[in-house]
Length: 335
Image (cartoon, rainbow, N blue to C red; front, top):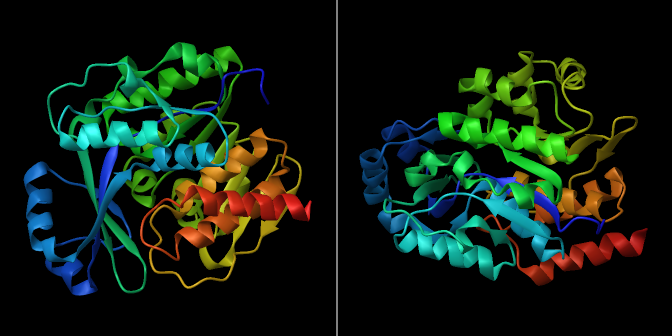
């Protein structure tokens, strides 16, 4: 596809990740619900950061949709990312990282506001489960002002990050972006992002879904929570009413992908997992690249599975460019 400037236009939270190795006792003592993302006030997050300081493994630019668009760019796709950061050290760090990764962004042109850039403490237990505490900072003020309508209208896909439903202004930006994308003939892709978003912000997520989306990304638990059933097959029947296609990741069981007509089961690639952070993000980003560049849903799923298996075998939500391109060559050689 080359009739539009961008393959994917995404909006999401701009978050700097602090990856921390902890144990279940740390989570319990600090009142953290294992496996979920919880929003935290600034003082609460600072307390957690102090408590875990000696366990910090790395700091890097993150944010769910940003990770996806970076993966797309590493494969040679063209992405645009709208977000909001402050003029602090972390904000400059975040902006410069997007540019270095080859992603166009509203941050390149705008004067950054005073404030504090969002941070996420990604706490990883020995079983590789991730528990996140997020202080959104200035990202909670993301609004329609951060939308770049010219770039949005010149994109094949709009990719909406589910985390934005937790902020009233972010929710407004999602709905306006969806409206503008539909008017421009772009496809709408949505990720639920985290079980907590559909569990605690289900009404807001329904507002975003509205009359439906073209492509939905979620995991098994998110699918069940959103459709209010413990039966995956029933959840899938319900999801088919709101989306024209879907990608449901199933952890070690792989993924189920539906292109609107056919269902494909993608095997998980066996690996030794150490950190599940970013697995869903890179799955979405590589899959979006694939379907933008002529791969079938099944082959795009195989590419995404390879990338996700690699990202869980390391610390951090992103891969080196050379590694992700190696996976693309592998699936291309098979087809």
